[in-house]
Length: 204
Image (tube, rainbow, N blue to C red; front, side):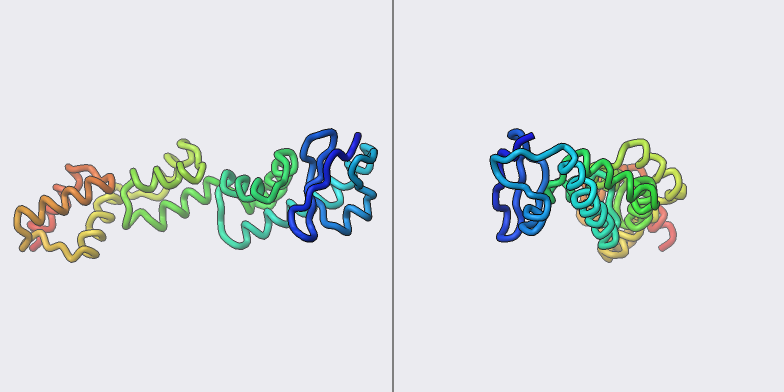
């Protein structure tokens, strides 16, 4: 195959194209080490060696570093690696690598996400946030089953009322209407909100 392009990415990094298609990013010293020069032929053995000794090693380390920095979903990790200009094949292998150590687990991520937010967010808000992060509907449903008690939403509503310093006993109709609207926009069901406020009034 032919090296059809060696484009500067930074002062020390270069994008390498083989037969007209982007192949990988190499540092200046690596170009010299593997004899990668524009318009010259390169053997399949050398390309495989570069992928195995340089690119695969680098993408695995990058994936591990990203997960050490913070827990991520598979979709989020893939997106970050894509931004690093790794090919889909290399990303697949890096994802498989970190999964084998248990460092990447969307089910665990969803459960932790729900637990950390269930007292302040509605299920609708939590579901939307997880979907945006690329978690499947099945894993979200499973996380809700595991994490939510029967009074999960009621507890979240009570937490918001406390944070807002809303006292159902002393609030007038206008204030109640405002809090109903606020909670409805956050995705809480009207009947659940009504029940919580009614219970607070009864306890007052």
